[in-house]
Amino acid sequence: MKRQSEQIRQMTERELLFHLYVTQGLLLLVAGGCSLFLFDWAEWRRLWRFDLTDVLLYGAGGAALVLAVDFLAMRYLPDDWHDDGGVNEKIFRGRSIPHLFFLCALIAVTEEWLFRGVVQTHWGLGAASVIFAVLHVRYLEKWFLFLMVVLISLFLGALYEQTGSLWVTVVAHFLIDVVLALHIRLQREEGVKR
Image 1 (cartoon, rainbow, N blue to C red):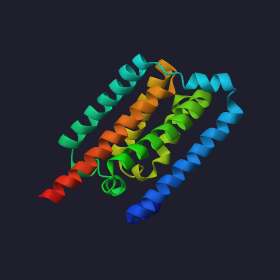
Image 2 (image 1 turned 30 degrees about the horizontal axis):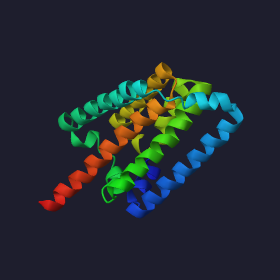
Image 3 (image 1 turned 45 degrees about the vertical axis):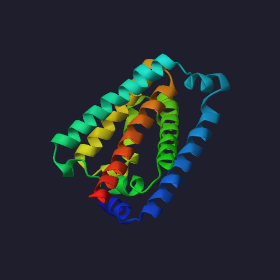
């Protein structure tokens, strides 16, 4: 596991971005392929039921809660506890704002469709959360980051259980990722100005 994690850290920004797109493309194909076999059209449409109140209350509200915990952890816990080896910084620091929004939207839609829509719907919250966490391989050797990913996955799964809507978890996942990506980018800009 350490060898794979080290290889990820040694990749250039361009290589990381390429692998991110390939991974998301493969996950999207798996989500789409599984959906064709596991859902009829009516069931699939129900997964994507949109209720603005749920999206704002549970999606945006849930994201705000996760972000508050994350920013408190960054402020009060040792830096090495939440250091992923610079991978997120490499991915997000040099991207334009529209590119950040696109990446975060792609990641949120892809991962929530697969892990909540397909895996959780058919095999349960536990299976979805474990698979989601393990696929974030670079966190496996960092106990705090791994714990956070597991807890966030369980939380997103609970939001999905509560609302029955993927839009809620997609919005929550998107807001978490985009706020953290913008934070990384703004830190880089502040560092350049100094």
